[in-house]
Amino acid sequence: MKKLIAIAVVIIMAVSVFSAIAEATDVLEYVHIEASGNDPYANFTFHDGATIDPDTVKWAKIKYRTITETDNTGVQLIGQFYINPAAEPFVPVKYKHTQKWETLVVDLTSVSEKATVASKWNSSSYTGVSQIRFDPMESDRDAEAAHNEEDTAVVADGDCIDIAWIAFFESEADAKAYDGTQNTPAVILLPEDLAAYTPGNAIKSIELREEEVKAEDIGSGDDDPNPQTSDASVVAVATLACIALAGVVVAAKKTRK
Image 1: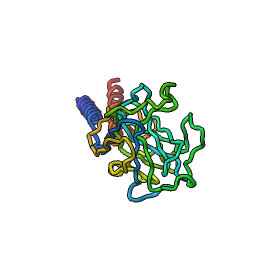
Image 2: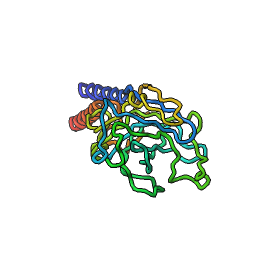
Image 3: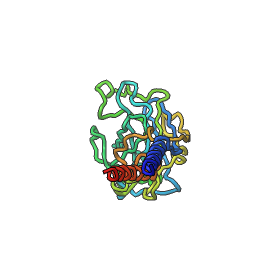
Image 4: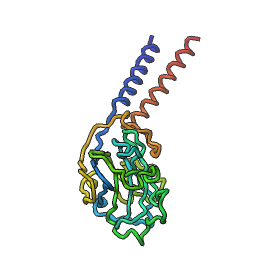
């Protein structure tokens, strides 16, 4: 009888923990960016007056949620980084359009497939080191159809994207490991930095927001090896509960023999 009670207690614990995982939430602060027209962009100043060293800082990581997927011609939207002062070629940011919170690691020395010049991500070209230009939504030039070469592709009125943070790193490993909590970025743009943007072109608004984010609101996190639940400790407790349950069941079977 005692063993049956123990089994029941462990089952209840496991069910409770897994329910907690399903319901666990984090409050996430982010910016909601709306734009329209041709070439929306803004300039952003790094947090706390920091400056970037483009000769050593080669990687970025973005936490984002796409809402609008394509431009007015059906071509997928991407993001773009530019050095400051801005000069071609841009650094492409190719989103996963899942409408969930995703993370994406970006090689800052990469360029568009259609670029005819080499990357300018270096200290000779990037001299305005306290800022970066970011185009949150642009047509993917590498995927544009022939008729879009005439610049007919635009961001439609009210198109939007959510950004939680943009962090910059010296190593790819640090970028991949970052989950928004470690003190590892060389420089970072937090929601308040993104909201305090310097207007460029065709940005309608950048608005600070926050919301509770559940596990089902988070994407696959291909670039993030960290657990995608709101509380990693909950996962650990769930695992221990399952192990304990298995042990009790095996012990009960042995006793019956």
